[in-house]
Image (cartoon, rainbow, N blue to C red; front, side, top):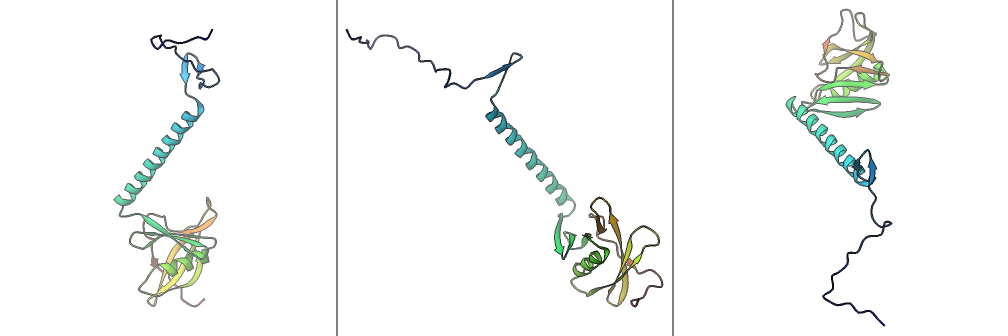
Length: 171
């Protein structure tokens, strides 16, 4: 005899089979979330942290007058401030640092590298260059952390000094 169900009979709850439900792991009485949602939360928090760091750096650059930008000159890297003045030049040799500095330091005048001399006061070299017929100099030091030669501190424009006494354009 076939069973017939009355439309007025209470409906039975269907339970999910154990193979279809997502298991929750128990550890010390606390329920932990499965790995996929945990990874999604971690990725979301990481993205929020990166965004916050970018915003803080952007605000710091705005407070200091607009930030810096980088120009590649040959094998050297020149960091300029918002006014276009070089604040740091780094390269594989002191000669390349001096050459890069001279190429980007002035748009109005011709800046010509003359020569390098040993520094008598601090370790490193003094880069001599000519601008508008006058000899000037910058200090170039070796950065042991990056194994490159560097002029400038990266925050203020590179300090230009008069050439040391007795230095001429001819060697």
